[in-house]
Length: 90
Image 1: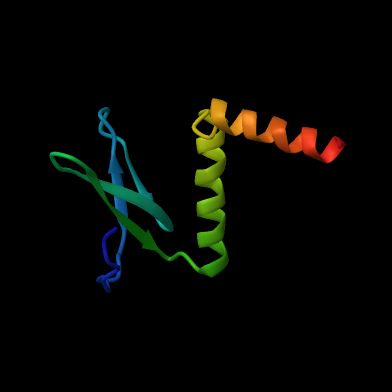
Image 2 (image 1 turned 90 degrees about the horizontal axis):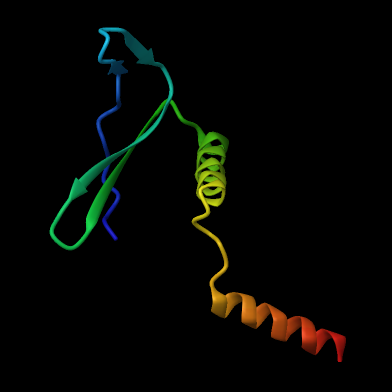
């Protein structure tokens, strides 16, 4: 895991679309990816984000992962849950 370093304050982020349209983002969060041979390093950039909003961002990413099926229980987890339910019944 990388370290957290102080950053320069981000002034603005502009998204440039293929059709020439541009959109300026006033507040947000984005992730920059740095692929390496055996891993993918991530740099997170946040601007104008306050404490409670960071919680919302993280919860939103967890919900996205859930909707994408990334947290589907493995066979081992399902078997463990079945064993726990069986013990509770007895």
